[in-house]
Length: 375
Image 1 (cartoon, rainbow, N blue to C red):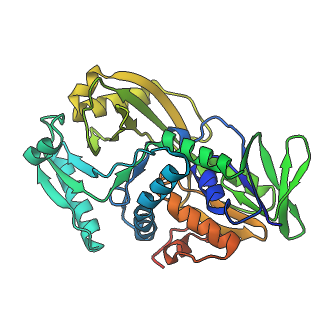
Image 2 (cartoon, rainbow, N blue to C red; image 1 turned 90 degrees about the horizontal axis):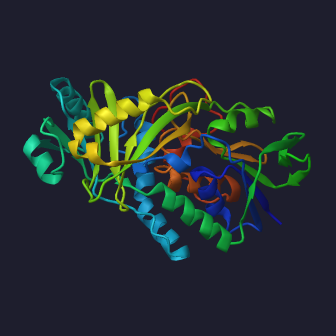
Image 3 (cartoon, helix red, strand yellow; image 1 turned 90 degrees about the vertical axis):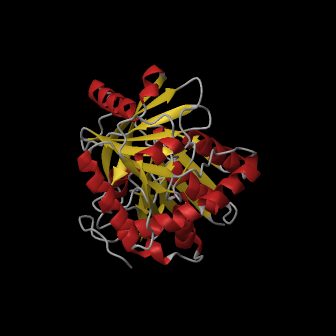
């Protein structure tokens, strides 16, 4: 009998449980319910093209393959429980509002062209024809048609519902892995009781490092604070995701089908700090309204904080870290984008199914302070 315990109920933990639930005898997910979980407040961009950065070609290769798996995943979740996860395929507009930003658009276009993905360069008039609410300050844009987005609240609800229907139990409370000899053999509950397992999947996001240390393993994950806002307008103002930089503040605006616009996100390496700050709210509101002035009259629905699980190379840790322990953590900004890749990697580690070569550079045993290269 194969028993699997998953530590963590964010996107990485739930997609791991989903990936295994049809093929093992028992899956239990433990949700510590800690403040600052990243998954519930994420914007849901599936933006492999927009997120490409210099030196991260291997991460882009994994992300690009993963985003291609999202339409199938969205369909399976809908079939499993009737929940529409709000998958949108209108793409992303990268925008320039200042002369200096024109050069960055050119640099990003060259990055994509080197990978055989030259984007469409748009003038200001074309940008505003696509998105009439854009500010007159917009100078130019790049259209990234293959980037997607999802409603993160709907995704988590769909996964939880699908898991319950498959008999997967989601328990509240903190646990830690237990090691017997060379093998991880289960988890210890707060009561001191041990829940035995053949495999433990560590998917605890920013809290993964101290949990791995309990069994003598180093997983190079740290918390990176992000603050974001949710706004709502009476009528929809955007159709696609917008990304820009305004007076040095990077901002993205992600429309949802329920009329909300998610505005994010700051990035602060300040440990487990979950305070909502006026500075972040002001920076994001000023930047967002500079891009879309109509948002000045929107309703401010929420101001949220998430602790992203950052790594030295911005890539995840995926695979077997020790006998009996599989890790699925360190996704940084890409938890939802990499959900299909995470599912495949966890299945491979636990069941020996086919692996993706794009995931090889993100094995758990790579040096924690070294960037990865192409496989």
